[in-house]
Image 1 (cartoon, rainbow, N blue to C red):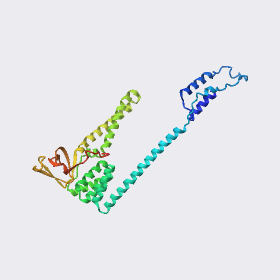
Image 2 (cartoon, rainbow, N blue to C red; image 1 turned 180 degrees about the vertical axis):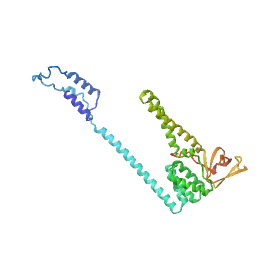
Image 3 (cartoon, rainbow, N blue to C red; image 1 turned 90 degrees about the vertical axis):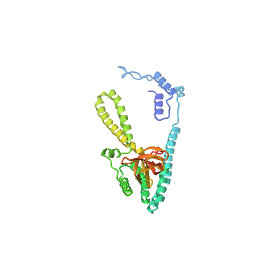
Length: 327
């Protein structure tokens, strides 16, 4: 290896040289002008002639070398990292500057017994940041102490969608139902398992296991020696996939559920104001919306009775215009 080749390699390793076509041409010419001599049987005994001067690097070859200063690239990379960190810090500071103040104001109002003001504070937090289990839970607590049992049960139910295994949410929801005179909800073991995780979790499990099944199929032919393990993994993934689909199927009626938020709702025999009443619904009772007609909705209660109720007396459990994250 001659001096030019060593120089090029050092420059490339130190990022001071770009491997342009000209540089590759120089390397090719060096290899042609200075071929590596194959050792012969008597080569170890033959001294190198002193009369032959060492080959000198021609200055013309150096004209083909392109040297690039690495500082601009490093500066750009460091600047991008610095700008990214600065933006993250600014966003976190802005979020911290907005959120704690609103939370502190709402919490203080709730502690002082100003439940209506506290409820408005929690509603403003939800309007700015979206639905979250803590905000819905605190809002429901303020509404329950204010006496709005229908809206309190609605927000407890929404909080339970985001945190299905939270004992505080479950306890306060049962207490609010008891105050409203509503029987506790009874679920079968299969339904309890389906409601143990959020909808997003079940959907993610179905997507992940479906992807694993699709990937394992071609790998059985590409790696025949691992076919046994892939078969076992495919069976487990298929079982989890169908379990997730079954849970999502059981949770599908949640999108048609509504909570009676009025103090009392009357179910009529037809969608008109002067219709003959069929039965009454209490505040906080959960019904299933079948269809809507004008200002009325055909609902079914937990006992299976159907009737037309004013849409204004109901509030959907999952809002149609905004998805609850993690539900």
